[in-house]
Every structure is written in structure tokens, then in C-alpha cells.
Image (tube, rainbow, N blue to C red; front, side, top):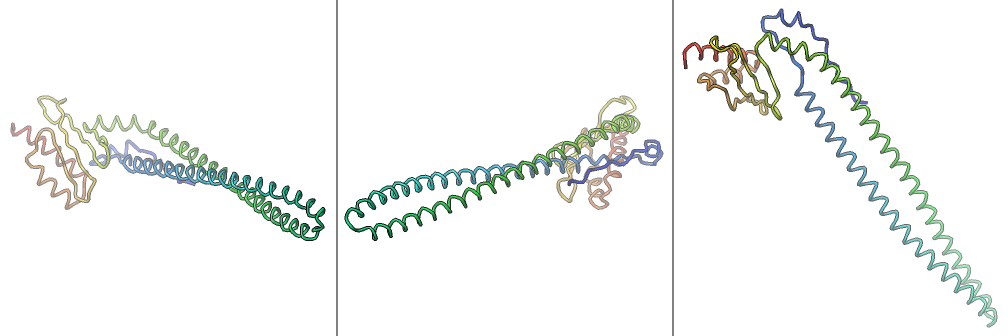
Length: 250
């Protein structure tokens, strides 16, 4: 059974009491886990459905072939019976009886084959039902985990909003492995003016595709980030650099 992701209880007072308050919601990990799980379930379901359909088609073809063969054998048997009458009349009863035995043995062999195929089909039906039950259980478990995570997220949202308001900084996910960081209260003349940057964490070396406004010292700060791997310090330094940019009047 999948392990339920449990979000630790957030102590807002303790977080705000830190020198550099930070909250790690682990959204990237959750989103990646959700996508991978949905892809795995979709692939598993598609493979199971395809295999089931292939086996059903093969069974239908085999059943049709055996039905036709059985009909042919029964027709041949009837012909043999008629021939037996003719052979009796022609004083060839012994030979006809031998042919009859061979025909009956052939029919019995085909009937045994048909019985074995029916048993195999019954086994496949059981296996198909087991696959359906497994897929249903997986989906039900995932929905339960999603509900738990949504509940935790709903509880943390007010505290997150309060922290963002206190820090004057918001962090949002952008697609895969990218985050948008936005600052306000940087420019004393216009506290609502927004300063932002996009951080690309898709590779080991961090990249910053864009900043608003342009930040001349960004290459230096980015080199420091890739050396230290301290992204929280990098965000603080970028905010300070934006403030210095405003003060310098650029």
C-alpha cells in the first residue's frame, strides 16, 4: 500500500521567530509524485486492458476454430455411421467397427482439448477480475491520499498567506522545476512595486532565465548560489540587490 505523505504541523510562531523565516511546503515533490503515480496507473491500466482484450480475442478465435472442427468431426462421424451400415450390409463389419473406434477416439481427443481451453478461459476471467480489483484499490487509495493532502493544504493556507504578507515575498511553481519569486516593499517610494525572478532548478547548476527589473549583479549572485547550494540565502541576497538597485537610482 502507498505510504501516505504526512505534513508536519506548522508552528507559525516558531517560524516567524527565526532570523530568516522559511516554510517548505514540499510542493515540487508532491507534484512530481502525483504525476509519476498517475502515469504509472494509466500505463498499468492500459497494459492490463490491452492484455485482457488480446486474450479475449485469442480465446474467441480458438473457440470458433474448435467449434468448426467439432462440427466437421461430428459430420465425419455421421458419415462413418452411415458407412458402417453399408459395411455391415457388405459383410465388412469388422473393418467398419475399427474405423468407428478411431473416429470416436479422435472426437474424444478434441473434446478433451475443448474442455482444457474452457478451463483456461475461466482462469483468465479470474485473472482479469483480479486486475480490475487491484486497479480499483490503487485508485481508491490515491483518492484518499489526495483528500488528506488537500485537507492539510487547506489548513496551512491561512498560515502561508500570513507568512507571505509578513515577509513581503511570494513563491510560486512554474511548470517543471521552475519557481517564480516575487518581492514587494522593496522600493520605499512605491511599496507595491513588484520585483521578481524565475529560478530554474531543472539541472544541477541553477539558472535564472529572467528578472524584473534587470539585475546587473545577478551573475555574481548566481555563481555564489551554485557554489553554496543555499537557495534561501540567494533569495535574500537578490532582494538586497534589488533594494540597492532602487537606492542607486538605476
